[in-house]
Length: 99
Image 1 (tube, rainbow, N blue to C red):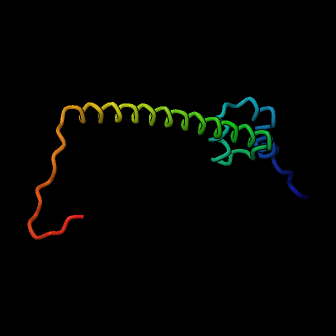
Image 2: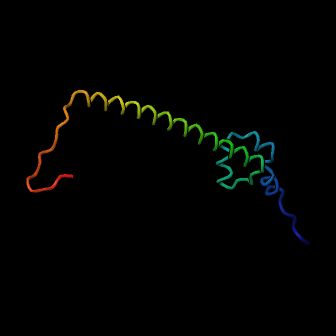
Image 3: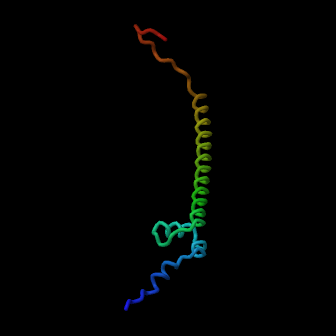
């Protein structure tokens, strides 16, 4: 006689059905996929991809805003420095030809 396999492994494999994956948050979903707790469905992969792209867009906007602020600060700093200083020429070295 052949012994029957326990039903527990089959239930564990089906534990995260499509509806369960849809109910999970993005962080839990990503951690589950990385840990190979379940295989992601196409809709799950699309959800994760959209979240990554949205996050990259937000990060790019923040960087762009930071660059604009830094550039404006640098420009205002240069003009203030130029107004206070005199332009000075370097001393000529005897025996060298000028440009």
